[in-house]
Image (cartoon, rainbow, N blue to C red; front, side, top):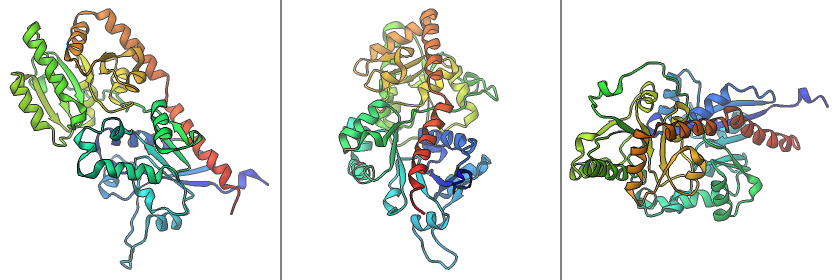
Length: 382
């Protein structure tokens, strides 16, 4: 048999995150950008979405995404599987933790699991209220077992998937996060633009309770009260219900003038926000890994990060680890960042090592391994 004449594998990658989703969008966008620029000689790659706004946003960035249109010209409806079969798709890879795989009976799929935080910290309302816990449990209990492969961001994530949902280890691949491109294409003076007179720390995070913005307020209050040190903070990200509470607490702590909420900001502003800060501070409870520390490492910015399982392993010795039970932990790290340049430089250099230990090529190679492994099996039938 002439291998060169063998049928190529047609693989669809499904995305669903708009820009305002935050980290979910950054993950999908990075993966799509790399995939569409990769040369898989024996595999055809296309990207799909059934969300018009997502397709539009990618179109504006000049990236072609195929819109899955379920309503036909004769006004009849077809299923996702019908659409995939009509387009000769052999395998669909969900780049987002979605329930869409429920619609598939015959076509195999790869699932992505970003986290299992509804199990790690089920106290938080965003994973508890409105049956959110039950929805996530149904999704993972039902869909993971039938996936030909599952990708997750860390060894701890893999361990938890296998333990909690009875998945064979060989079905789970670790596909660690990558930072977005952080090149500064346009210099923006952040402090002038937003009328900020003090040094500032930066936290890009949606306003969910688990993001733990309150921890930063407590530390800023202590710095002001006990050390006569005024440090501002810039928050960016969409409000999912917790912003009003945080602003009220800022007033209670008498630090409201130190809080700058910018909401959703354009991509060109993000590297400037990092670069002109004294540190990224990310006291989140959710992990086990996150993208912002990688972005800060890439730009040579100190990182203060939650000292929790998985999160500490992501950054190793490169970050200032913070005890979420004790805001003095962050207070002490901020004072060190301001006064001890040698320690900061050592952390920054270790951050570069973290970035260099997992590259875009590593990311793509894992995906190619998954696809190529399936391609070999797929050659067993017509």
